[in-house]
Length: 353
Image 1 (cartoon, rainbow, N blue to C red):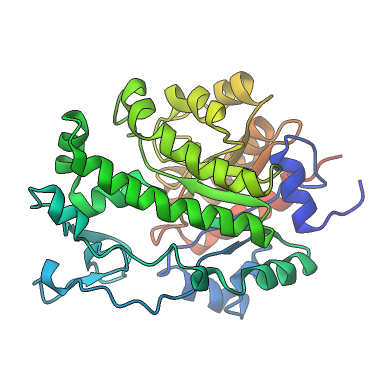
Image 2: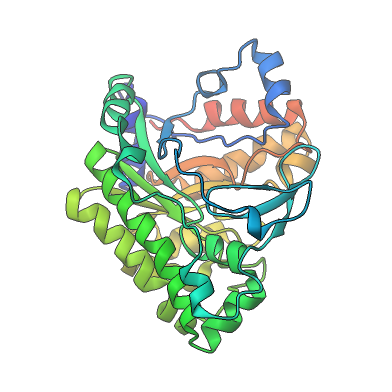
């Protein structure tokens, strides 16, 4: 088979067809990056590790929301959504501070300083960026991680948000809709810019199953996810949708496909049966990730890592349909030897005849 560009490879796999080799995506915890940069002799780990998917995001904000009244902790940082964090020493794990946790009235939600992500200037220059990445042969994904639910609970708190949703409280509707409105604008902008993939998702599952019932998800989150996907496809009907949720997402897969999802990530091997997933949905759904960051990658031997990569590619990648990579970021507890074993195994076993 003739060698493909990264873009051709990703789009072929995402459409459940057979590329020249299994494309890869390799998110890396920042604490691991110096180790890899020293090994490869470059900070350009995207090229050194032969990644196939580039991403775009909104440009920086010039808006200065008045968030100070919501925080008093001296060690907290907060992003433009107002999510407060007290970070660990590697800036990877954080304790959250919830700016609307104590809000009791609708007026308090209405007064909240939402980010200016609906403003056109945030997306200026994206078409040129996509054009440049395409010229390099790369596929382009428009980033909308933590689409709605995760941002909402990180502003309101998980307990208060779910309580509001159960009680059909208007505060939950206002918070979720304000976030969705921002996401709809971004999805449309990414599609206009020429992105190949809309990358979205929310963690709605635990290791044992869904955090909420399917009817509850359908009532509160499916219509908002649908709005986001439809906004992108009104501009480009062919844009692919990549959806992330950690955990045992099995029961929600039919609903995700019905909402327009094409690629499911990260299909954690610790709680999702790859053979069952491929056999049940592989004719309609592509997969991304698959390599266990809670098990084999950090705790296995290099030989066990190679066997794990081989089995993942042979199962999820049979007949195409796999973008391989860690089922989360490559964490700090993963040795260099195991990372190199993973990459070598992808090179060895990820080639199609």
